[in-house]
Image 1 (cartoon, rainbow, N blue to C red):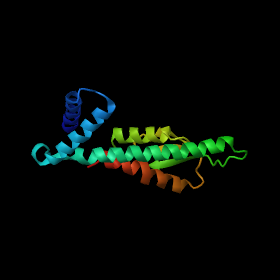
Image 2 (cartoon, rainbow, N blue to C red; image 1 turned 45 degrees about the vertical axis):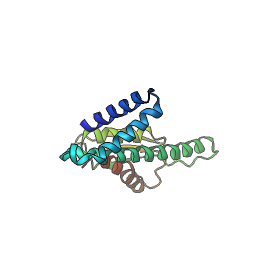
Image 3 (cartoon, one colour; image 1 turned 135 degrees about the vertical axis):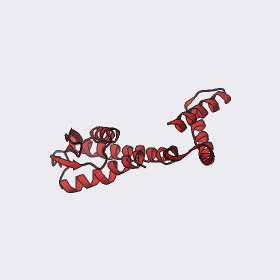
Image 4 (tube, rainbow, N blue to C red; image 1 turned 120 degrees about the vertical axis):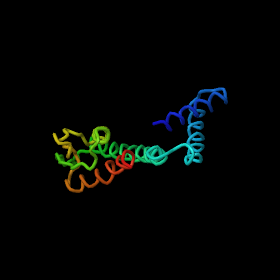
Length: 161
């Protein structure tokens, strides 16, 4: 968290030096600040702080993956909304969880719910599984495998060392 704060400060300083706090200036400052911190990582980051240099790129990968899934599922739902015979196979599946932290479970449940065609219904009492409703569950095991190898794996790369 300390390195993120330093990176944000560097982005603000970059924007101030360029006399404009526009989004492109802030993004350029953030990228340049990240590169500067990465080159100085042996001097400023010890132990768990080094995770920042892995978590930030993995966060960008997660965002890109979610946008791809959002577009893909939006097209599928839109297609079935206008089709005379929609190809729907609704089902409720139990998805075992690998991640145990509240942040991981919250983010996974939220991303599943935000994806059209899927909805997180509940989290098990012992936080070992999610109940997920999907309108495209022709193969329930494949749906669970897709969610685990897609969103859950990428979220784990962001949060776990």
